[in-house]
Image (cartoon, rainbow, N blue to C red):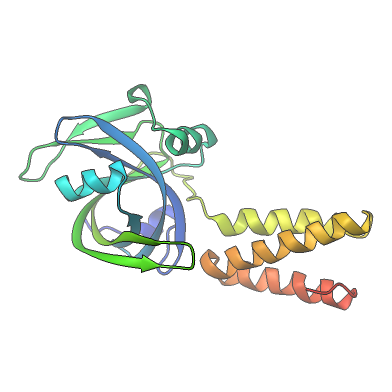
Length: 217
């Protein structure tokens, strides 16, 4: 069956917030949130810093599952620790390794990825240097559980927050206006980095309107 991630609303060159589930060599499950970029209809890219459980498991197994969900509890559990087994379902791996895989039971969709290329590099910034892994993977199986599945993207949330602040900016005090404008600049940064063309056009319209009103951005 041909794999096409556009069937679940994931498009080339766009980044989405997902939950990655993996299993180690002893059968222990792990779940963690990541930003995932679509390279092609059946190819995805991850950037994962060294030292965590997810990258350790991916290097051991060279396979993982991407879970598409908007459930806030699952993102919270995955971020603060990991999602307990009671929320996960184990399945048999259909590849030659015959290992288990695990997915988020109530995910709207999930897909199995096979690592095709993993490059280790040193990332340096003004704070510190970190070992990072750049992972290119092929989607080998796609499962859609909810026909209304919609992947999470940070840009639309940043835009909505900016619109809410915009609607209030002329009725608040000067300090709050300054805060709103600072938040706007952060939202603009996020949208330019991970947003689609409509989201980028929308934040630009908002910026121009604020400038026309006399605000300095």
